[in-house]
Amino acid sequence: MNNPRMIFGLLLAAGAGWLVYLLAPILTPFLVGALLAYLGHPLVTRFERLRLPRSLAVVLVFLLFALLVAALLVFILPAFQRQIVEFAQRLPTYFDWLQRLALPWIEEVTGAELVLDMATLRETLQAHWQDMGGWLKLSVEYTMQSSLRLVGWLVTLVLIPVVTFYLLLDWERLLPKLLALLPASQQPRVRALARETDAVLGSFLRGQLSVMLALATVYATGLWIVGLDLALPIGLLAGLLSFVPYLGLITGVTAAGIGAYIQFHDVQPLLWVLAVFGIGQLLDTLWFTPRFVGGRTGLHPVAVIFAILAGGQLFGFAGVLLALPVAAVLKVWLRHLHERYVAEPPARRRSTRRAGP
Image 1 (cartoon, rainbow, N blue to C red):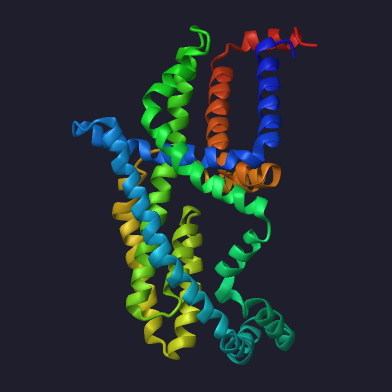
Image 2 (image 1 turned 30 degrees about the vertical axis):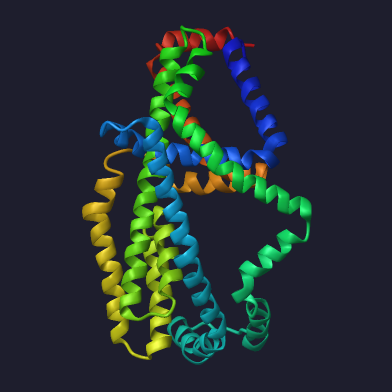
């Protein structure tokens, strides 16, 4: 390898990874703040177009964030917890249905003999789920056991809004300053790479996440209208899994169908469940995806899953937050390297290989 720039780039990437590994315990508030600032920046820009000062626009966006968090804590989390408790209490009913109807039907269709120790499985799950109703209380008690851990959580909760506010306020000034640190000859290329990275990352974070939240809202509301007791968790799960094509739909229809049949003991509610998910898919095709994502090419679902799992395995929670930005940067860089390789004359490629070690 006789390219000094490539060697320097690899060393720089290795050094950055090692630095992230060392600083992972304290990076969480800064990464969360940077992510929130990235998501809120377009909204601040829209307010600025209404001739509002940037500081006032940032305050308005901050108030919107605060209202969303308050709604999550006051309305959604208690309802979610309540429905999870109901699910835990109904586990015996689900196991009885599985043993009496589902397993015999599967054996009849497939011809395979299924042997499951339902009693042991039921006892094991009930032992782990019976206290699910107090999962928030247990989390708080676990945090309170260590004063140092409690202080760390409090510092993180205080730093996140502070970092988000100042990044939003100075976003337009920070990026040119960072770009000015590079050599003038490299600035146009880095600016182009940054613009493409923003397009790739934004198509997922701002586009696909909006589609996921919209579908989760449609599914949860529709299942609630149908009368399904587990409407909120099933709707949220189906919406959040929708970034993988058909996974959210299949998961939601299966879970909601089983839940509706066990709850109502009738086939008609299954038709309403199918109608809810059919309307959700119709809205996704005709409005959600064209409106929020459009023709932008983001990250492949498999790449998203791998990046999040790999980031969490290597760097913990900080790695999970960094996974998607790093994956977007790698995608853009690899595409540019491939384009340069394809555009390079074949004779030059052969001479480069002959001149190699």
